[in-house]
Image (tube, rainbow, N blue to C red):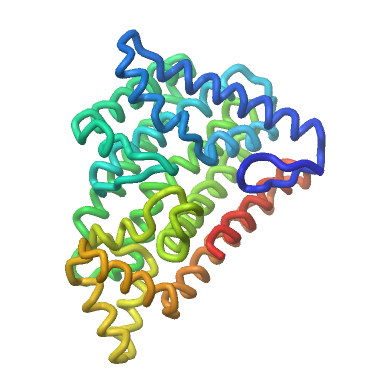
Length: 336
């Protein structure tokens, strides 16, 4: 039994482990090649987050999903490079929108070079992803375009907020389905599709990826409150400081409206205040870390991870399926 990647994924089959490791190594080489430019400054900015590392969660899903067909098919590695480039591009843009100072344990691109360079670097990565995608065929282009539309729609819905009468938690879960679930689903879809897997298998893995993606982001929401910067690689409470209500905050507000407890209402009032003040921000983090709303968010994470696991039921038992099931456990473990 060997371990693959930062998730501590245990792989029982040596051939599977070798395939996944070889694939991820090829993806890393592909990312460095795709982020090169004739302009040295663009190369430096484009490779900033590539070289900072990262979980490579989406490429890992491509490699595991490809095991249900031919994992050596020529489109598998390029499609993994496409989804990771797309993900990286969104990080550049997200950090500008969130005014984040740290990403993956290093200064964010917007902190280092300013917002304009960060946005344009993200655009550069989208362009390079599209260039690779064009060689993978019109169906791949269509799948990626639909996912990208969902991703942007999710971001817009987050910015606009829920419409009057809409449950804020339901709205937020829809946002996550677009912002995160869509690209994770495409990772699974590309891996299966490029490997020539049966269409029913492609559909099963796509559904799995959608649910796992939401669970993954919910785990990040919990980590943003519960972890220190060493664990998460970014400044804790970034969303709090920017006034972005992630699931722990939404669960708090839901509880405050339902029970009307003085301590809940006081914490809501604190969260609605100016959290750019370091003392207020630290106090809000301290109180949220001890609040039942954080545990409720953990339970929500577990629910989506279990839904992802259940989606795999139609697939035949094999080491790749077992590895995908273990990823559900790994996501839950991240949330504590």
